[in-house]
Amino acid sequence: MKTGILITFIAILVPWLLQAQNPSGKPQSLSLEQAIKYAVEHNKELQSSQLNIDMRNKMVTEAISQGLPQVNGSLGYNTNFGHKVDFGESGFKIVDQVNVGVSVSQLLFSGQWILGIQTSKIAKKIAAQQVDITELDIKETVYNSYYTILASEHLMKIVKENLENMSKIQIHTENMYKAGTAEITDVDQIRITVGQLKNSYLAMQRTVDVNYNLLRLQLGISAGTPLTLTDPIEKFLESGKFLSLANQQFDINKNSQFALMLTQEELQKKMVGLKKWAYAPTISGSYSYQHQIKSGGFMNMPHSASITMSVPIFSGLQRKAQLDQQKITLEQTQLNKSLLEDQLNLQEEQYKFALKNALEDYNLQKENIEVARKVLENYQHKYNAGAVSSLDLTQANNTYLTAESNFTNACLTLLQAQTQLEKLYNNLK
Image (cartoon, rainbow, N blue to C red; front, side, top):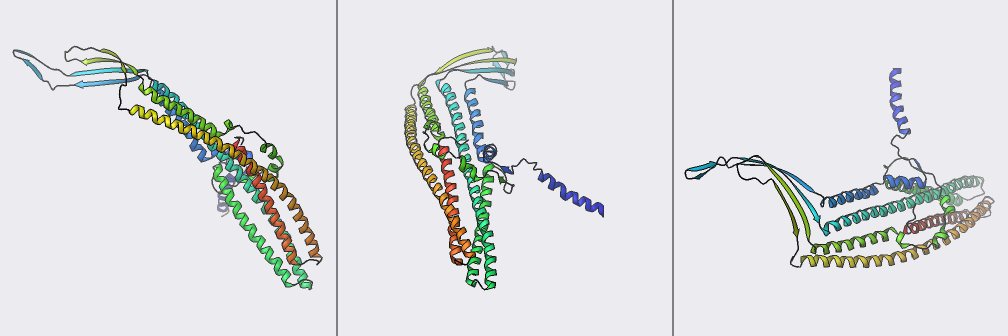
């Protein structure tokens, strides 16, 4: 009986210990820097985007291989089923033939092939830049999710402390009512306030859980994995160089989207050149060797070689139409580049305004919260002394919580404004 209990205990304890050791390597405590690094390594969307680079590498190899020697072997068997050729008094029987051969062909000159290789390499560069843009998007979402959770947890902490404080006031008010120094309406007023605080706290807790799951998705870890954020929100508010960022000069060439557009323009220029080379001749050479294992008696020429120059003469205006299409596409790409440049410069101004406004609002709400806290503390002392009613106290408490909420939102808005401007500058490290 004791042995059975021991086995059962071990069976329960061992999996728990293995889980506690976290053998899967999943993170449990993450700073913002660690979260960004982990997301870059494990985010599934980013991993899928990175596979495009491997695909482009294979396409470059494919483009190069079209100009490399092409070698083919052949083995042939020919029979006429013993047919006899009759020339009157004489004749002969056609015997079966068995041939084995090898042929080599080589592209000697093709402008389209040369430009095709260059084009495929530029396409590979585009794939890498698209990965960079995806990585920037992932970083921005992780930044914002991390900040949102910190802000929500900060406000939850305030609400919890306020709930505990108001619960004590509720007990004090009930004792005052029993002693005959307070009215039942005072008890009801405080009780309703406590109930509202409890509901607010539970709702915020559910919101935080949802935000944690969103962050897990962005990090590429499964839902339910234990996760703790180690950086406090005060760290980013104290170290944020908001004013220097708002006064920074914008180098548009460092912007990832503009860099991609420049590469797309380069690619389209190559496409125009590719269509121009369609008018040029193509030169190729070939060599073949045939060996008759079993000969039918006819003359056999085992070696043969040739050089061919293919000169395009007239294609019913097809080549001209294709060239004109690529020229139009190039013009559209250049117009889109100019439009993107204007949009990015406008975005920079808007993001700077947003950052400056957010910083001003943050400083204002920071002062407002100190005033609201002092007012609440003053009303609590007066309420305990019977100088103000429960309605006055609850109104002061609501004002304080509103100030805390406004301050938390101001913190979050400021950090998000900083993030979007740093993304524009390609400075999300």
